Length: 311
Length: 149
Ligand code: SF4
Image (cartoon, rainbow over all chains, first blue to last red; front, side, top):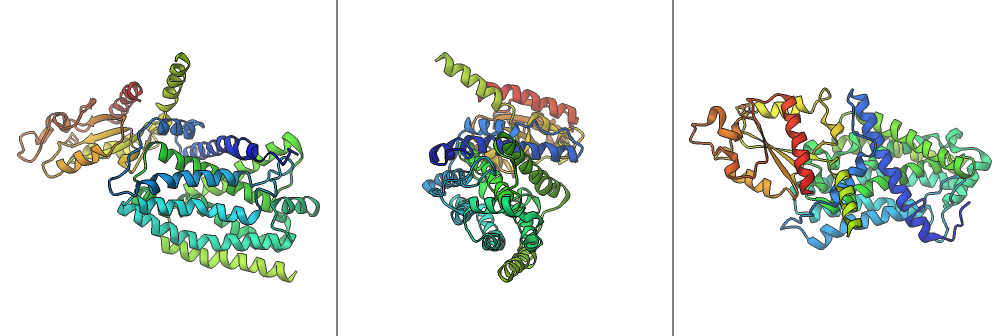
């Protein structure tokens, strides 16, 4: 176990900060490469998102005339910083336990909602009509998937009797992973539907739909500001997948082997839940996605909560 | 100073591996656009392996592909969109239309040559050009872009 008092280190270097960013970018690169292979193409190199980031850092940031400049430029910064904090809140089983001072699962839930909110603000602050459409779609989608997530987390927390992710991980290490616990299977299914939506990939990339609303909220961004959004989404991938691992399958050996197992799990989640999904499906309409989330994941997570409460 | 220079060189080398492409249709007959969109960028030719990515927004673009003879109707809009593209950028004129007006050259409705209005860096002639030619144009644009970024 790392010394849990070193909060700045945890936020800036490991497991948050640089480490999470590097791994998040690698995950994105892997996703693009595997997707290209599945489509019969060669695909970009694994480090492509990293090249993109360096390129964006060297470009000029343009602010539209009608944009609210402080909000327009502040939004990506807030998004990236919130995800930076988030990354330090997710435990790596056997390697890292977040300091309780830093926050628990509830803080994580709130911070996890920040990127979507930031995208909405960015879209409306840019003054572009496409940004406004992105704004309304993002809001509808967020309303749809945030409810199931909260219920899933509540179900798991109720089962363990604690809102601390460290306790949740410890509980599963003694009692067995929730992945094999039928009581929580509905919650698991709801989470599996939630995370592609939260990561904004193809069946659910409605707010940023490139071919319809030209990347919506991101339309007017260029240069370093756009780069910050890329940083945000790379970190978010690590956070959301890491949360899934902590909630449902946190069994891992101690030390370096534990870290390797953790990273391998994230890679599997990324390829199965994101890459395969996005190359095999078309985009949903916003009303379809909304109805889907209110029908299945919400019902499943409610069911799970009810069973846990009764059991 | 020298350290700064080597770092800048390193950053440049990484940055040129991520050229994002944006297309402007300046009143083309769509022949060149079909070649750009479907042929040059479908799996068979896959310019994503060069790090290229099609972007929907002019603000994300590094390399601009312009097709068509810049018709009178669309001229102002093309100039406006072009101004929205952040520097450094490279402009590639695809097809014979932007060079001379092509089959439309005697028309009252076109403003060819395009390089009277926009700083065209590379011409890819052909009516429409072959995908291989477009890819070569993009590759030359990347080389030029390296000097600017
Ligand atoms: S060069 Fe030929 S194919 Fe291309 S836009 Fe002009 S007329 Fe059409």
